[in-house]
Image (cartoon, rainbow, N blue to C red; front, side, top):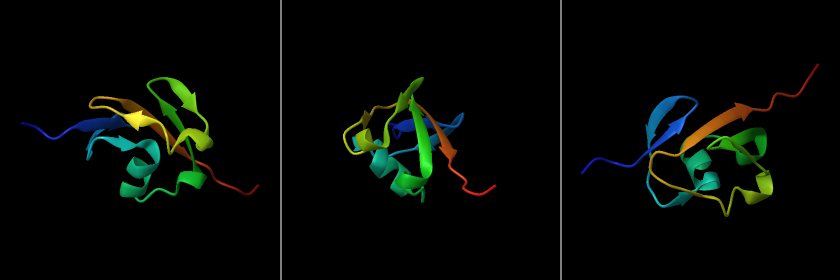
Length: 69
């Protein structure tokens, strides 16, 4: 049996499922407050990161927020 995989920014990433978007981000050393996430084509509000559950094969686009000018 293969390990569940999330497609993050176009690349397969093994994941411990079930998990939330927040747990996945932390496992990938990403600060949940410093990224914008799209889950299966739908923008996700940061307030939903703790509730939104991931399933095998889900697609995430994760964009790091950069401050400055």
